[in-house]
Amino acid sequence: MASNATLNTKVDPKDKALFSKTAEALGMNASTALKVFVLKFNECGGFPFDVRRAPKINYNNPSVLHSSIQNGKLVVPTAWRDDDDD
Image (cartoon, rainbow, N blue to C red; front, side, top):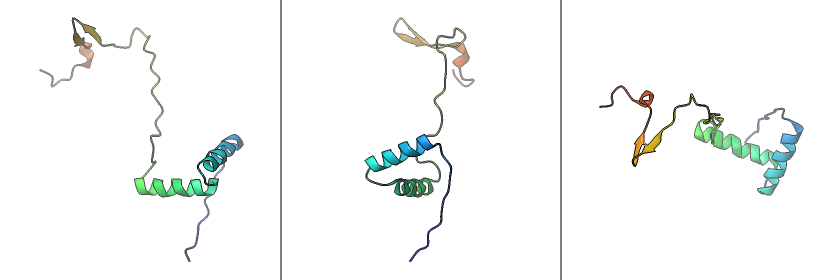
């Protein structure tokens, strides 16, 4: 029989309650959900989902460069030009 290791962490009580509720809605308890996460984390060599936050850009800021369509053609700011463009 394989032995098991214990994994402990502290989370906000509200997050724990929501995690448990979501796991139950998926037909498993919180412990099983964590086991699934650990298995997928190891299988993927990291997080099995994107952990980056969405960039917060204020597109109404006049200093943000915008593209436009003029006469049916896409026009981009010259600052977007790559050095190797012809």
